[in-house]
Amino acid sequence: MKRVRLYLWLLFGMTVFVGGLWTLSVFTGGVFAQTDTVAAGGRIYRQKGDCQACHGWAGDGRKMDSQMPDGANLRESTLEREQLIFVIKCGLPGRGMPAFDRRAYTDDRCLGRTHADLERMGLELFDPAGTLQNREVDRLADFLYEKVVGQGAMDRAKCIDFWGEEVDACSEFSQ
Image (cartoon, rainbow, N blue to C red; front, top):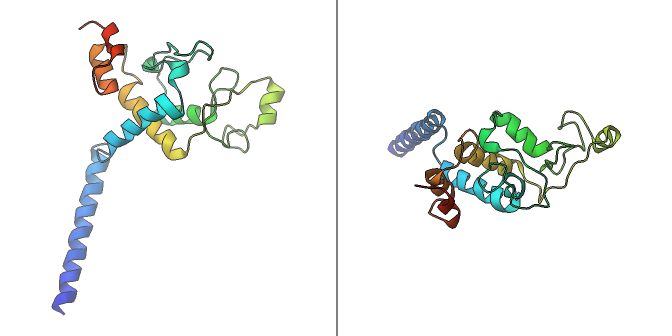
């Protein structure tokens, strides 16, 4: 009987502890794993998604690859998170932004339009560097909202924060 009572108290204690952690993460914006999530999103921005090719390393629209279409200045973006995620997943047909959802325009997830609809409308959809899973899109959005969207023009302090250290790119900004 004592053993059962001990297990019940342990179960109750763990429930309260886990519930407290969940409540804390809700009220603090999910501080647990946020740093890792933002860092993972930064890697997706620079590598798998190759977003910097069009949007620039700082997200300011100064593209890194002259062969790529001009990307928007994300630092001045007013998109809400859900809108940003939609654009990442479904792209902007006819405007150079690729769709990173591998099933975009194959069903109704992108405004109910299909590839055939885009062709009829004369809208070209560029192929992305690579498709992204939903969790990768979420991490990319976390990164963009933490380091880029609405952050204003890049300066030296933001550059160091963006990269996590002083890099050559930061030397173009005065102290």
